[in-house]
Amino acid sequence: VQLQASGGGSVQAGASLRLSCAASGRAYSLNSINVMGWFRQAPGSEREFVASIRRNGGRVYYENSVKGRFTISRDAAKNTVYLQMNTLKPEDTAVYYCASSLRTYLSDTILYTGRAYDSWGQGTQVTVSS
Image (cartoon, one colour):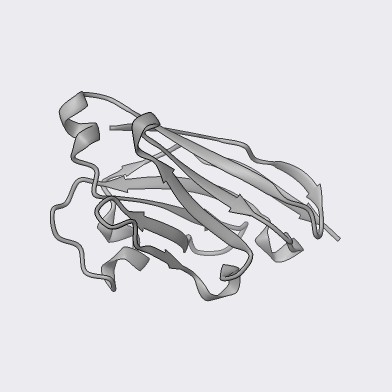
């Protein structure tokens, strides 16, 4: 599975952006993706979980600081996951990475860690100025 992220940019605080992540590869692999998610990494910081969505049931998970502002969604027909980011803050500035997992069983807990995912996109920069 290859992941291509897009949609980053430079905005003022309070603005919105929508990130997209398109998955490509063999049909069997694409149909086997169980979870897709977003992580971010700010300069000098560790990579951190942002949001994820399960294929079956569509359950979503969010990091606490983005709850109520970010929305993750998925278009299964397009093999694409989106991250709608509203009310952006300067602390949201980071490189955002999308990720996917073919693993058949993933607990809720592990979804918040990078260990759950086996494919990663190249990252897209989001810069929020005050």
